[in-house]
Image (cartoon, rainbow over all chains, first blue to last red; front, side, top):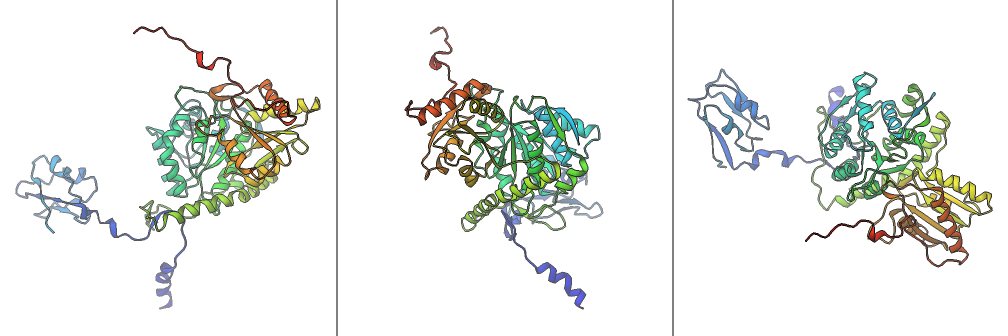
Amino acid sequence: MEKQQEQPMKMLKKRNVLGPVATDFTAANTGNWRIERPEVDYSRCSKCRTCERYCPTNVIEIRPDDQECVYINFDYCKGCGICTNVCPRQCIQLIPEVR
Amino acid sequence: MAYVMLDGNMAAAEAIKLARVKVISAYPITPQSSVPEMLADFVNEGKMDAQYVRVESEHSALSVATTAAMAGSRAATATASNGLALMHEVLGMTAGNRVPIVMPVVNRGIAAPWTLWCEHGDSMCERDMGWLQFYSQNVQEILDLILMAYRVCEDARVLLPAMVCLDGFFLSHSMQKVDVPDQTLVDEFIGEFKNKNTYLDPNDPMFLCDLTGNEEYTEMRYQQKVALDAVPKVVEEVFAEFNKKFGRSYKIVEGYQTEDADAVLVALGSMCGTAKYVVNKMRKEGKKVGLVKVTMFRPFPLSHIKKAIGNAPVVGVFDRSTGLGSLGGPVWNEVAAAMRRSNCEIYPYIGGIGGRDVTVENLEGIFNELLDLKDGKKAENTTWFDLKGNPMEIRQVYQNV
């Protein structure tokens, strides 16, 4: 039991650092910046992975076995629209974000 | 140890090799170009186990070196003149993020007028960016100061970057006899690079250089001030250890024949060699003159300067940069501030810029003028002492419109 406690207790130890280092990560969720979001027309998607390759934030993942195969991590997708431009079938479009 | 013939740039590259730097990112600029060229050869020939990153500008060169050091590698770059000016923004990043990089700066004037030649104007522009600054008198000093700067910069009490400045061409392309220490001794002296403060490590992520509000900014600047205040003590420790290990003695500020001097000249860089020769020559003629050689200009070594100047009644300060728009050159400004409670008179001298040679005659003229000022034979000094007689009429063109 004591051993199990050791690691978490070590993690709680703080040390001084000099210069700018962030201690609070609340602003890291860049998906908040999005005003438009990509929407995929799966009836025309050929699972070619072009959007996956070109996404500058690397938030697109293709799971070819799934019918809705384009998985986008919307915590970090900024809605830049590069995927809509590179899609050879033009089956991704930007639609207004609703929250 | 072995004596070899090296020019200043070779000595800088050799020191970077001896320090076992792991990442190199440098952009060529005259008169620094042979430093990155030699480092590229070292990597190519397998003499250095390092990654050589080709970058498109000095801005990127220092950005790569800074972040490589954040990620845990000893990193190197080198620059000169307009290249250093292009680095200006990143200099603040390196110092503010407390990244201990050692960078040779080959001193060359900043355009315009375009010049390729020696002047301290480039590094003096960056004197308040939070970097340490060392100025070398000869090629041996370049190698030694770079090796020692690694120890100083990476000390947990400091964690700041340093420029080791060498006069363009006068040192960078001057072949001199240099004692290159054994790799094993250097390894013992410098040790392995280890991040002692913040770092970039996927196993323990940190977000460095975030936006800092006014509730913490002052304190972070103060942290840098505290580190700079600690530097002289650390430098003295490192100089002493270096002397013990390698047998060469260094001083933050060296007083040369200053004890009983009637006139003292404060100078830095390669001209100090000539100045020592002139001091010896004039002492033989019975003229009591001395030299104060400033090896470390940043942080400004207040007590060392005061001690070296001592009770000299007249002091000349030789700036190899113009300090345009200021009361005098940057070194004069600070020496004058340092000596403000003393009774001595402090005169600014500006010259040796854009590659103009600082000759024996020049320095003799300055010393003689300082002695005349002391004896009341002269009222004013000649600040721009190596100026031609007709500075406003040096070029003419035909008027065609």
